[in-house]
Length: 490
Image (tube, rainbow, N blue to C red):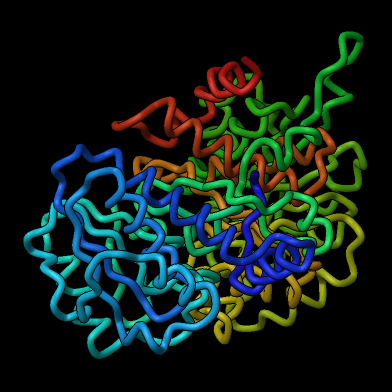
């Protein structure tokens, strides 16, 4: 269940299911029961307040209320609007409710131990204001456990953005498949623990919907992860070239190189300016070292076609140094991982980079954080959704775009995308991104397809952070990979 459905895709899943013969009220009954089951983790005697909205989300709340009341819970139910204004399945659900229906403003959120937020679901597309905003403020001010129906009210299901104000839930109960808003920040922080309930929608509807967004999980990329052969040798596993900056900027490149070798590249060579050779020589053992005299020297190294991937950018230096080196790399036949200074080199002329990318047949993976992204795509940086930003950037550039953060998103030019949610906050440390670039490099060297290599590296990087825990530094991440692989293949 790695597919993520945006609100329109989820609406289509509902429509297809109803058209195939399952009445909408049957789906609503199943959804309300799933919400009641999560709420019922609290003991009998818990005081419950249910806030229902004017649409199907509110209908789910009515069903949950009816079931919880039958189980012996004490509860109040409040409605935004009037019962007479409810339509369709929501009206049917409300007709089965035997308790009192209060105006939303009269609900005693402060006196509740548990609040069920059934105001608005993933389809909300406008800022919340008025009585609904006041109710959300009261919910957030309470000390009650909060269970959100589908998605916390006020979170956009497609982008994870807050639409004016949003509920902060302890649990969210969604149906059939998660939404991007559950995993994109800040939606993920609002959603709490996520339960995905089976309400009777058959997985076959996905064949018609063809979702393009997935949760980044091993199921997405594991079939493409290279497996060393019993009769193989290091030359079968690719040869990565890492381009270093000058003498005082060598650490980032070493992080890249060690990660590329750890994750599986057969050989890794460091291309070093003359002044940095001694520094690298003092630190490198299993990584080879080659002298590189500027862009011409890099081109000379890359004439060796056995060097099948280049990592360039971390610690590379100012534009007058980095730009010629990156363009020399782009002129080669090798796959490219472009990061950090290599991205910023084109801040004054992003189209110069995009033109070079369009001439290449080998893939390029761009790995910006938000600041670097804004240098290449200033007009996209203000778009409200990270997923949309990454997709549009990939389409414009022709590269795989890996937009970093707590919700790192990988997108390819054709629109396929994967969102990660497994990275612990401990990964926010100097050099962490350099290690990630090296992991992508190593997987590309082994022949893994670029989109899958980027997605796999993101997940493995996150799991390395989980394995190491609080106190990790970037130097530790590559060394954690054997333990990560051991967990993966148990």
